[in-house]
Length: 531
Image (cartoon, rainbow, N blue to C red; front, top):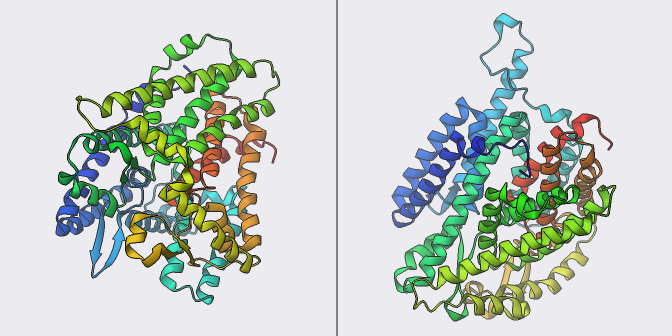
């Protein structure tokens, strides 16, 4: 296998795999019922919160994994929520508060225990060393970045951006606080197997859910789908857009993980190919599961019709071989590796394309034309609503950045631009739209943080990449080395996507960064490797 020591049985026969599938499926079902019956939404919310609190109190790692599963399947975090008089608390926020509260309480108990003699210690799990991240070489940068966030928050208030807008513009970054308990809880190989089981299970549910939505919206009369469409949109789960030629785009923000999985899998194949001249058939025969995951992920990525994802995949694919050229001593095998990896990638996409074509036209008689819809998406992005809106945003965004170049405008700073989005056009005369939730992720950060805060932000990102690329080949265990390479390229994929669609200020992107920093710090940098 590509990962020689990887136990497939430990992934699929893990209790966490089974529980994640049940959690994901039941939560989606309950969410749809909650859309139909608002009272059920509030009841289900509190049932989930109570169960989650009990599970997290008994096993904080299990609670952390549940929170990550919710992150993958829920996109915006409102798959269930409590609502009263227009005020909403999402399940994601509830999980966040519970995890941090339990972790902090156990940290306090740990501190108190250190002041008592052994026979007086309070009951606490001593297998966990709480707040261990303070010893990480990344902690000082983590602390500095939170000072930048605090400054941008205060500046937003002082600039009159409004407390609500300022807070909700910043709250995605607060997800970084999850790094503190996550770093404590995920130390051993078995912990990462549990995380892998959860990631595979929730990603598979997301992939099959995408296919389910594709078939429904391709074959069922839209008259009967109003509730389904409204549920997906109102609860922030997915955006289903009717395109020309009867085809529907199925986009979920959390599909970033599925597209990232493509880069991860292609990266580890490319790395293995660069060190071996084993025939591609022999490699793929031993890794049928990886090939299946690659094909399923390709299907979901194509169906997302996200140009940001597509550009990110192309840029990351090129970067794989740039980085291999940097870290490999023997360059002669790189062309051979490139050819085989390209062949593997293009084959999986062609299989995915063929599957979608058949899937949307079975049974015969469907009016859906996937090929023409795909051509339309690729033809002229500036004429399409989302692409046009992004272009229209650039000029006012540039002007506001000039006006707030040094200190920034702070969180909650808004710009007004002409949106071509049908939803915004319907709500605003002339389509003029004012918002603090901006596309063009790096320009958004520059506007809110100012040049100094932005440079600190970029420095942290480049430091992560530099440390990983510089030290990958110094990892003795091959499986750990290959995983580190795959995670690094997946991180690079998110960085590219963030140019067009902001993910680095969103729990979805930050969730990956938390896993990446923990793996990098514990499996590479704690070996006294060069900074």
